[in-house]
Image 1 (cartoon, one colour):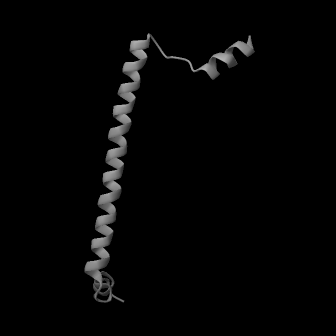
Image 2 (spheres, rainbow, N blue to C red; image 1 turned 90 degrees about the horizontal axis):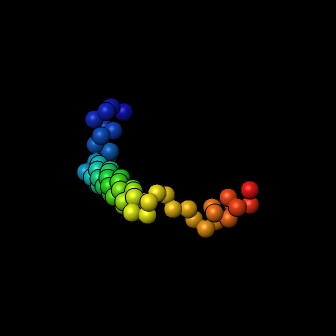
Image 3 (cartoon, rainbow, N blue to C red; image 1 turned 60 degrees about the vertical axis):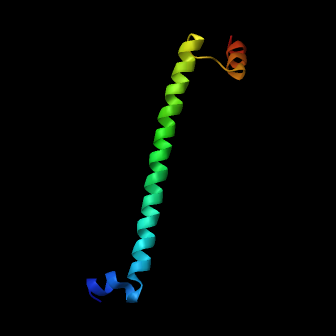
Length: 69
């Protein structure tokens, strides 16, 4: 089996390679969107922490701190 036969894929090359291309584009798009959203959420969290005067503890964290004392 030659490389040309492999890439031709028995006459289904257009379908197979277009599916691979679409899947790669979808994965790249989802990765880009996830990274962009992570950056937006991180900057929003930093802004909220600055507005609150530092990192805000959760109620559960505060209870655990009280139990350790």
